[in-house]
Image 1 (tube, helix red, strand yellow):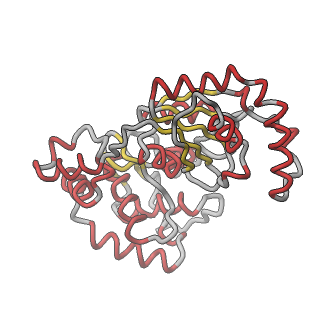
Image 2 (cartoon, one colour; image 1 turned 180 degrees about the vertical axis):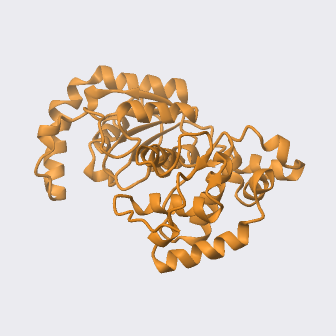
Length: 302
């Protein structure tokens, strides 16, 4: 067996390759997603990948971004399946603890694949089956009821704010799904991010795949030049005081648009970068909306 250096890879990408190797070097897309999900759920405290409920159950968009990178590097081929291009020892690229975990994992789940693997996950993790297109072909009546009960059921009006700082795209999307958000309004002035999934086009596409509408309202953003040298809460408060007085008061049309979107869609979230609500201008948008005489919706920060 050939030993390789994988210093150019992220740890999560090394794990992908090692999982492929431990299962013989070739897996269907469905099996790869399911094995990756089970490994991260059961053998990792800090998860290499997060997952969302998608067409065939648990799914990691990040893993497919990594797949494209691994194809570019020649580590896996570009076929529909996940297939290693060589017999290099990818398991050795993991640390000893991870290697032991992977051995235990493969011994535990080696006999589960295809529909039996999907059934196992749907039964034990019904939330990840709520958007499945194949559950009715695999699950019995009681199991389908458990999946139905796992679906978010909030139908009342609500307005939410959400930031993505420090979150994976899947973590972010799950917060929206779990709160049954119908529309995301991006209030960044310049919706560009170096983090996978959070630039305007990518975010819009990923939200659409999950049935969530994306609307960009740049007029409610703050230009990048004004966001420099923000080191303390006082710095943020000064910026947001100025923003509230000089920008928000002039943006009644955009605020009216948010009100109308909420009237028509019931559960709406505004989004920006910062994880801490008080350090994001979305807090001032929420404040101004709350003070309107025609605003009757509760606001929650998720």
